[in-house]
Length: 54
Image (cartoon, rainbow, N blue to C red; front, side, top):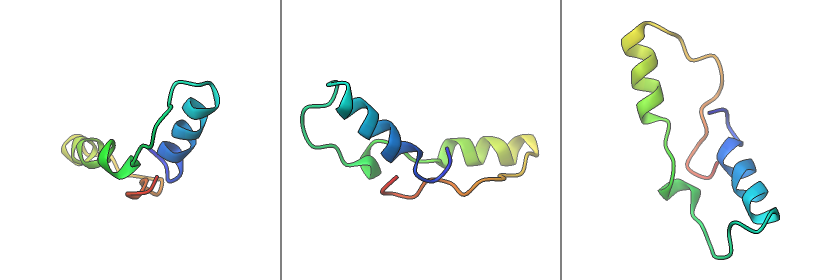
């Protein structure tokens, strides 16, 4: 997921009313699986992965 993706998704969910409390994106999402899958399959990551704050 590109940088800013988790944060944008969270803000969208808040806007439509699906999130009512506090959410820490660093505890809900990492790129670890996707990065390892890309490496295993021989693909190169071409975007900046999202950081711990989305």
